[in-house]
Length: 483
Image 1: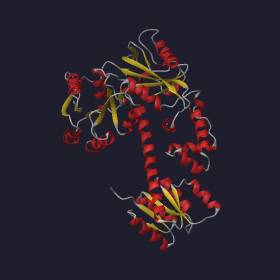
Image 2 (image 1 turned 60 degrees about the horizontal axis):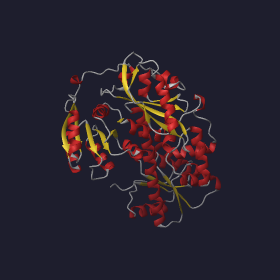
Image 3 (image 1 turned 45 degrees about the vertical axis):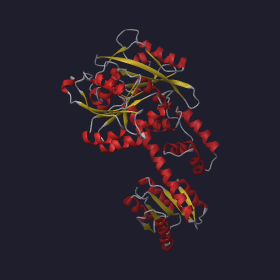
Image 4 (image 1 turned 90 degrees about the vertical axis):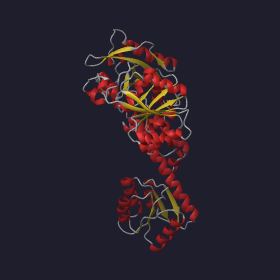
């Protein structure tokens, strides 16, 4: 493992050399020792160290505070301040730059190491949080099914790109319209089923579905047979604020890509004209393996090119054959699933992964999406579901059974209520500060230290922020501001 690279900014040469030697003794690399703020900014941008130790008081036009601000804004590299003393104004300026720590001079070596390790760990966790939210945002845009949210009255408040393209309306045009107005159905009166489904979901407070499939009519007159699932959306205090509905094609046809949908050409080429999807299956269950074989044996566009009964066989097979799709039975793996997925992607980045899961754990599904998983099937999956999942993920979309999808979406979708102009209400200055810190990954205790307020006050502000924005957790907050 590469040693962390620490850049030191200190204008007292003897002190700087002493710090450099201490860092090397602790096992860190020191790629640069600079003495001015301007040089620090230039060097940081060029060499991109893992962390900067910055003396607050530097000679010249750019002091440590100004240099730290520029470094973090341009590179995102964490900064830990070195300080012996300073005037109150300088300290206040330093706090605003959101440093990852302070080290008071003179310091003990153990204090130096502790401050650095905490800062590096905090930086890692913040980057993971931000990256995970990027995946969650992309998930909403990549799901190969129509996703719609409504308010308590069954009026549309959000649609993902697939729903927009199927209906011919964008989210703004569909906003606060009834489901029957947005989704045209084949038989008169059937549209009201969608609205009654939303009301029933709110009343029963659990997942519901329309028992018989619905025939949707697309803007160009095409027909699409779908299953509909609905689950309640809740705010931060567990009040139901609306419903999330997912529409899943049950005919087993290959989902069209978004570019095709934009042209409203929903039919796809015959499968015998398509390039074959190669697939590898990993499971230790002969029963599951046989079921998968039988399911796809008549599908001309899908071919199982190998099977791995033991997890140790997966990487060599994937590296050699680089399949389009890899199915992994989560009950079979003998190592951490995240590590396995990371290794698979390292050897074959183009391979899309479908997980066979046993039971619905929404947080695991969310984590798995951030690890690069594109599809989910389960013990309750029908043969057609497996075929759909394979074709959908190979086409660049995310696929999951309706129950998995709706349960997961309720964890990450913000509840949008009110008129368009009130979707982003004015936040107070303090609330904006807290939102910024939360979105970048800070937890409550870190926010307390940066803003010099109590944890109780932070929680109170968060409650107000969540209510104003119609979100219930940090993931939803990040998605709201991304959108």
